[in-house]
Image (cartoon, rainbow, N blue to C red):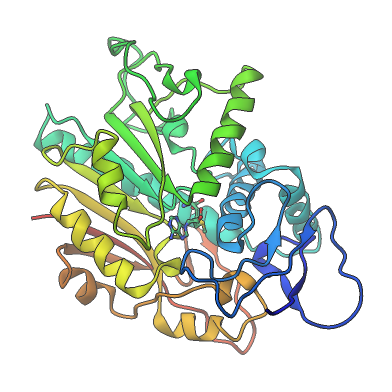
Length: 368
Ligand SMILES: C[S@@+](CC[C@H](N)C(=O)[O-])C[C@H]1O[C@@H](n2cnc3c(N)ncnc32)[C@H](O)[C@@H]1O
């Protein structure tokens, strides 16, 4: 049994492992003693910290860090998007830490604001393309590694050409979110949603917390109606375990309808065989015309991450420097790969002097 002491008052992205002596500054976090030499499951590579919010794994905790990045982006006068649920979903502790980093002139969130905007646009384009090709399709969106993603409420943004007309008829009010555990998740926006169902999958602890937080928002009357989809379904799943496919189908996924799969900030945390399973199984479950949207990093970045002081980077397990060949070999036809290492949307991404930045790619593939 290895005793690991962890100081975690910081945003977990930059958490430092401390094996040294001296009392850890807990700042509301619990100190855990765990066996990291034999965790017994790939689900928990670094069970080191607890935020006191039910997330006791650094990978799960990234879900709140990324919501905090979106909350801070939303406050900017030149914000790339508006995510008004992000502040609550991030939680005060994570948000405060990131505010402090901003005050020190650091802005690790800038690259993730770019990523959010990129996949907002990519998702809306994919939905529009499917709608044009098959107007009667009941489009499904599967967001795995959803974390605190609030796209089902946010998109399409009011200014978007894809935004439904306010005159469109209201959809069937009997449609409901059968798994969210919150009635207002089943509320229907005034305009007809573009998508039938959004499935949000993540680790069970993340889904549990997200349900709780959304329930709290609902209780305060702060949960708006769904915009993107008629129905939102949350799936507590471990994507390192192939049973996710059964769960998805049991919860109403239809293999006959086209799907947009979105894996944003996910695949770098999966076991390499699980990534192959994810792509091939998703391809098998996808009607022609379905689209897959994925963000990833290179294998060199994963290797480099193992030497990092950041627990998040140390928990990366999969990277690929030739994503086009990889996805083409596992059931998909790659349409484009964007290298966003240096930035996009007029935002330059921060670099470390003297260090080559990690390759970051965003990929769009289709099922033919
Ligand atoms: C960096 S966060 C990204 C969250 C969200 N996509 C976003 O951009 O805000 C990575 C997410 O992947 C989830 N994840 C990592 N490994 C997973 C696994 N084996 N099964 C299910 N979800 C996983 C984490 O719990 C976390 O919510």
